[in-house]
Image (cartoon, rainbow, N blue to C red; front, side):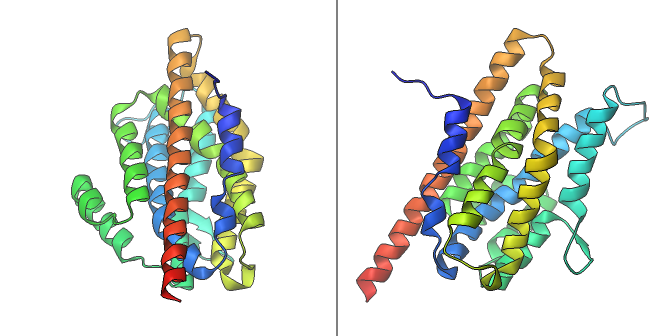
Length: 257
C-alpha cells in the first residue's frame, strides 16, 4: 500500500479542487461560513503554545527559549491585533468577520458560537451554533487536540497543520478562485496577510518551536509526525466536505433553472 509523506498531503491541499470551485460571491459565502470556525480555533492552538513558551499567569521567570518566546508572542500580536488598511487594529478573526459581512455571508452563527465560548459552553456552541457540518467536524477535532494533546503534538499541529500549509492554500485560493479583489477586498487582504506572514516569517520559526519541544526524544518525534499527519488529513477532509457542499449547491441551482 502506498504511503504518503507530509509533503504529499501539503501538495494535495495546495492543489485542491475547492479553490477553482469558488467562482462567485455565493460560493465564497458558503466557503467563508465554514472556514471562519478554523480562523477562530487557530487562536486556541496558538494561545496554548504561548502559555508554554511565554507563560502569562503566575510569578514571572525568564523564558527558557527567548527567541521562541518572541516568535510566539509575535504570532499572537499579529493574530490578535493586526493593522487594517485603515490604520485600525483588529484580530484576524474580527477582520474575517468584516470580510464576511462585506460579501453578505451570514455571521450570526459564528457570533453566537463565540458567545458560548465566552460563557465556557463549547459543547453547546458546537451543537447549536455551528450549522455547517464540515466546519463542525473540523473545529471539534481542533478543540479536542487543544484539550487533550501534549505540547509537542499541539506544536506539530500548529507547525505542519497551519503555519506551513496556510500560505500554500491561500496562495492557490487567491490565484485560482474566480473572484476579483474589487468584489471582496477585505477577503483578499486577509489572504495576502497570511501569505506574507506565514510564508516569509512564521513557517521557519514554527520548525524551531517543534524542535524545541521534541528535543532528542524519538517517541515525541514519532508522536509529532503522527499528529501532523492527522491534522493534514483533517484539513483535506474539511476541504473535501466543503467542496461537496459547493457541488450540491451548484446542482440545486441548476435544477431550479
